[in-house]
Image 1 (cartoon, protein in one colour):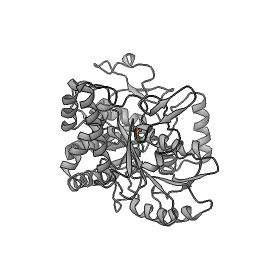
Image 2 (tube, protein in one colour):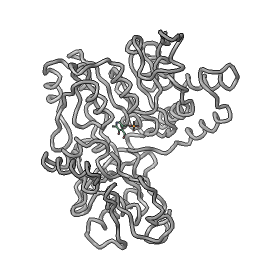
Image 3 (cartoon, helix red, strand yellow):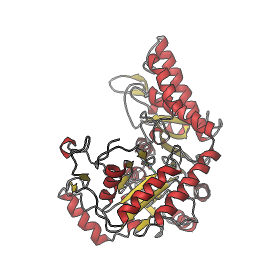
Image 4 (tube, protein in one colour):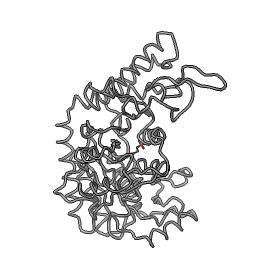
Length: 447
Ligand SMILES: Cc1ncc(COP(=O)(O)O)c(C=O)c1O
């Protein structure tokens, strides 16, 4: 890729926690199906039959990915767009009211926070300064009155990579007869999903299947009565102008034309991940995580957020560089070294503000800025996240680049900050870097 300083560099993708590239098996499966593409559950022609069969095979594979074959009869996999849609779906389905309490944590991504805040009243498990919380804190929150209707918990943090002790947390919730939803968006590509969870949600694009499908898994009986989240064709057996007979789940939950390409991609990614095997996946990730976090933490002026080296995390390091705006660090990594990372608050504002130690008065000042359209003051951090394909050499390149930025040496280019988005942009005439060529609304740090 072209650098803003002139010359070229091979691109280093350290943004796997946001989205992952398609694995070769995923590309092949999609290419194989494309000539046969047709509507699912909506045609008698051979193409529709093939597409329907591929879609239903994917559904079975998704269920088996969550818990061998033993959920095939009792549970359903609702194929939807992503984790956000899956959790909104469940929040609608549970028929909660503001009198109901959903227990969740301040560690959550907004996808596992906002749907619950809208549908019910939330009780939060607070985190410590290192971004973790204890089983005791969860236990106390589970025992508080009124009893929660659900415990909505992340399987792994997209900010610190922390892996809460999900199995133990589910066990203590079940002792209180509280069902548990695990947000598996970050966990699914890295570890087996917790088999005792009552509901699971995850996204294909974070597990090497970037074709727009995700899944909500839960007991069939949770979806058997009442109207579904989405109303429309494909979810009904009989409609007249006054009454509707909804189909049985999972079809009842999948109104609209299903995303067969996404489902087939997710199926292929599951096969590929299973072929690589969890042992190999987690060994590679542990090596990347150690290197990433310890190398960055050893740079003077760099602070890696989250737990220390004694705690296992995913291959994720979220960090700040003293004296440098997070947006500038990310822009410089991209423009001068060809390294792609994410910056901002990672759709987990409550968690990040706690990790950064931002107090209420400061928060109110940011709120006032945002209300007048200024995003440039928003605090944040930089996140580097590794995938299955990340190499030690790529991490070394990041560490070297962050070292240069943290040293305080002047950048070889000027950077301009857009007040509306908060993003920085190099002042460069190199191909691909002309600020004039950047479309309006192209912020890279939303949410
Ligand atoms: C932990 C976690 N939960 C939920 C989500 C939302 O996933 P999606 O954007 O695919 O809906 C993300 C995305 O970053 C995430 O990291």
